[in-house]
Image 1: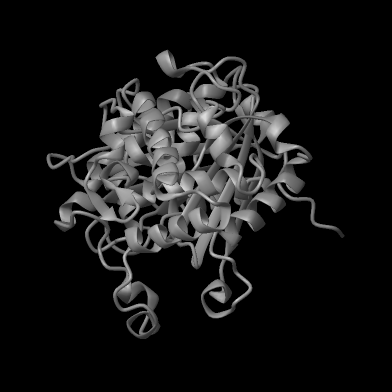
Image 2: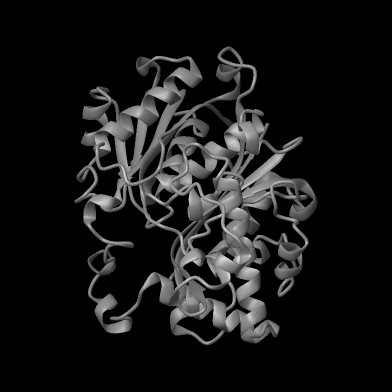
Length: 399
């Protein structure tokens, strides 16, 4: 028997997403319930219809705690199987993948994926320390590693390889941030709803050169969830379910860090996950076939490099597409229509599902003032870790 993947075996029939932001007055449980209630109402189903659930949360000590019990308790869904998952910043998509695979296998008719994070309660300005999550090797291999520093190294290497002088490189990255802020200002659920100018982005305080303040996403509180089922069940529930064409995840074995064949200008896990997702979804020319993107823009350089890793832009040529407005809201392939991590925000466990939420609304024509024209195939890209050891997920959806 040859594995056939999950193409066209699963559909999304309901989704929910809270506002993202500094939500001091809401607990993780409040956010879980809010996202879930929206998804239930959207799907037109009852809690009793959901047979299994996956809960994604990364820093469980400050969010909800270990195990699947917090979901069952908060949503009052006793005795169904609940699996808690964590895969760094790709946690939300990992939860979605579990629910999709369960339905595609025939084990369940309907499943729930929910991601949540209360990052602001940690008191950190950025992400808490991942050291304990990575074991003792972390202290020896990269004792002073930070996320901005790791992606700044990606940027300087990319500039050097493709001949961008510092001013040129900064301008390209700034253009990406300006675009995301423009889109985020249209999104009532976004954490940061403020347009910025190219000059403001260029002159913002440096965090890790060449990345300035506006090149870096913030961290947020928030939750998002999806209810998935089989196509034949969905037909009786709504006229516009969203079809899952592929969900692929690739995980680094840290070879990029320990071998010299990695060139430092791309993220290998993204390349591998994208190639597998395209094969699963029967996509042969992503630049021509995909109509919108949501990518993991933890930093502006990540978005730039991801365009190339996804085979949308040729190697070293993404700057041309950025400058031509190819990824703008009114461009050929809008990216970050909701503002992305940069402006919607980044509660780790929820981010992957938030991307899917935006694509779901776009494919249904329900994205309001940021609605793109005639959406077809859509792609989300969710990345955990740093360029030299990472987890990348690519999901392809269709109306």
